[in-house]
Image (cartoon, rainbow, N blue to C red; front, side, top):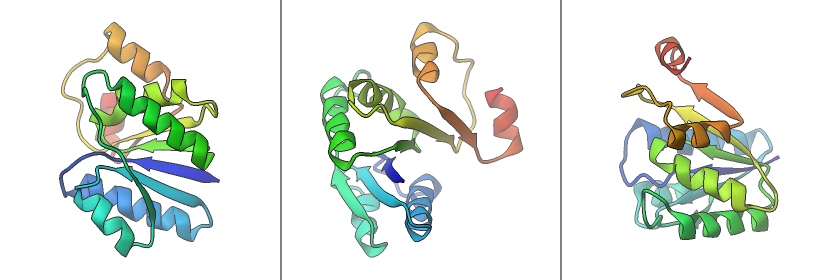
Length: 147
């Protein structure tokens, strides 16, 4: 299976480490993994140390990243990705738009690492969450919040 891990966070904490570790683990299980990250990020630099393939992606227009989504959709199509795995909440709109623009229509998997800050049932969030195929959480507390 071909998996595209998306994490454009420029930080360096548990979320970014998890993206690297899960990518490495999935690759060891026989899956073809590719990381899409900011070119100047530590996740991008460390992916080489982990023996992972990477593509640079610098999202523009954070609120509505259409051009970056088109670039990500091209990466999905070129790599023939079956799954788009999103780690950072801020990447969700980018991932949803890329999924919609892609000819492959990959499954979109989102893993929530942090607590929900507010109720998200407006039209914007309904659009985003309607396009997510699998929603994963790392704790029982996050599961309760998500439900």
